[in-house]
Length: 576
Image (cartoon, rainbow, N blue to C red; front, top):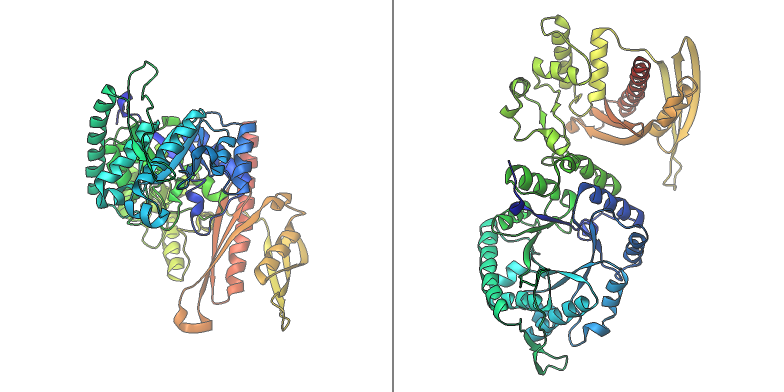
């Protein structure tokens, strides 16, 4: 899809404010700074940093960015209009906004008459004055204004004329962007299109009027008396020509329509798109920039970020999820680990011939990669492709490939799951090929647990006996549970032979009961995720004994980590 200069869109990220309102999500100042700098690298033009003055964390965040600014993006401070029956010049929260030192400020105001009379408990006229006074004051202090029209679509549906008056107030006061917000997330795409088109038509008429006379807004003073004209801000560009603010869109996902609604708004003329990385946000979340950017750029032909920056999208998504300590959505469109994963044998065979058969874009365009999933539904094509992805070449005509496939299906029928444990599958392939490296052999282990009545904490002691390089090693270690103790004992026994094990971490541990109807005799599947600071891998164990299943997964996790290290060392020697 080709683009042109007229299709330029402006991205506005609000992960650091709206995104952090998600239940269970919390970030430190350092986390916010790391995310802001990653978004800057991604090419996001506007990054909303928070509400200065609302909490000490946001004050410190803006101060840190004054000391060490972003390279490309504009950091934006966020705030509401002044309170009813006051003046912007005497409003303390606006002083905090000015102290943040940003060139751009986003001000949100009420568009829905219900919120004005019920929420703010003031008059419709005073609400217009609040919008005007706040924007005018910040403009007089040298700030550029993005106006977020809160609850815009609900307000429009209930009282179109008044909702439009709020935009006229923002225009007259000097706002450069008018962002229409679907704050409750209940609007459908066809409504978004119709309303945005109507707003654009209305603004065109306003623009014609502005070209003839100064903008005029009538409102009330803090005492409630009519004040007449309170704003005559000339709307001009650098060439002295009168202009009208551009439209933006801000959608929430309560109806699972946030991305579709944002795209509908763009198609209807919106030029700014607000959203969050991974769709984080309050309730059901905000529009997901990780879906919006590729849809708008690769499919609709709009220019959002450079092609090189687009290839960083998957990494940026996973980086943010890591920083906020939330598991990535493996099935997320474009950036999920499974977004380009193929499981059915017929699918894999077709994709191997031509990826267009089952992929809507090239995964590399968004920094993702194709994955061939191994499971009991796999065909020979899956096994061959998966082996190739790990540098193992199998001959389709030889029996080894079919033996691996048969063994795979036998193990999955017993409860193993290799689509989520690719490291175990690699070891299985090496076993079938007769070249599985024997780094160590576990001769046996024992785990003893002490559960003291009246105390919540139980201690565990694990003893392991292993053979390494012809030597028998007996070691013991404690842990706050049997699996932790077993892992610690294994590491303690091996680290003198393989110092790199000190860099391995057990990063995740998952247990699933496979046949719960058998009660405590049920078969258990354990998935263990390990990492070395650069890579992560997952191994699996299955047994009616949860400790035995854990042992299988932990041991294979250590073995695969050693295999990776051995391969890296071999590659280094070859290159030198």
